[in-house]
Image (cartoon, chains in turn yellow, blue):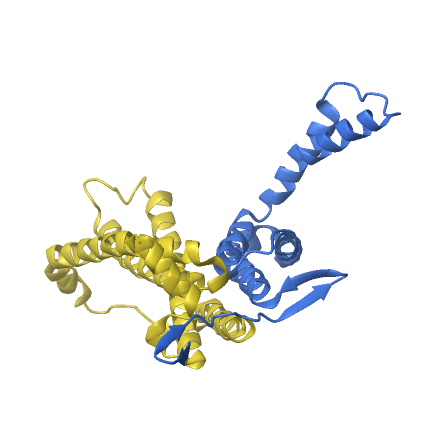
Amino acid sequence: MSKQAALTRMIERSPMPLSFGDDKVLMAINLFLMMAMMYIGGAVVVTKIGAIVRHRAYDKIWPPHPVTLHRIMWACAGCALTLRCVTETSTLLSWSPDDAGLGAVMQTLKRYIDPVSLGFAATWILVLTLANDTMEQQLRRQPLPINMWTKKRELTRPALVVLISLAMAFGVVFTRG
Amino acid sequence: MVKAAGIVVAAAALTPLTKDLLGYPFEVAPMIAAVLSCWVVRLYYGARARSKEGWLVDVSITMLTSLFTVGAVLMMRPSPFPALILGTGIGAIGAGLIRIAEKKARRLFDDEPPEVVDDAEGVRRAMEKVRNL
């Protein structure tokens, strides 16, 4: 029996990954946070890459303008987060006995995508290390007009996404049998 | 898993909660995954359309995509993970659904002039054409 077939057999025999020990709430919590961070990380990537592309005329991409560096950094962080969470969501959701073949494929695919997500995290750390000192010097300039509590309304949509993910995770885990 | 006489017996017969909508049965879990992921995508990535065309357009596109998602889940009966991808995809297409539908509908009229359907063979060919849209 090949390894893939063995994996398929294992998925056919258990309604959820064995490591959860049949604890539905634990699985729902894991699924909830993985899905929420998947969507939030994806939104960070989309907004940051969109900003890089939109402002490329005056915030040069190469040689990188400091603002572009900052955006690249956070786009890489978002990419790492979202790829990692996508793979985890896919393995958790696709572990279902009625579609075990797909579950086995996703388990293997996760092992290929996870290193890529860590590559993005490494790029983030690399840019951070290279640009950190200069950026901090610049941020120490007085006065620095950051009044972040005027942006409270920006939190509405992420909060809604988190709530919907909560409903989705618990709904899926508790209604699929 | 049930342990019987030291042998692990496969006992993973899931009994998913099933409902039906207008007589079409569906599993609840994939439906939740698909529709809610569609809403999340509309909420987040459809945000740019809101400032440009007003919230009413956004609400109607969200309703359109949700209905398409419900229909797709009823039709395909996917397991939860494909349902999540389906909902995310339809939500991301968003208003593009209208253009896709337009293209498909246009193909109905742009083809060769409709043939006379007066026998079983003609009906079969017509049905084939509709199915291949």
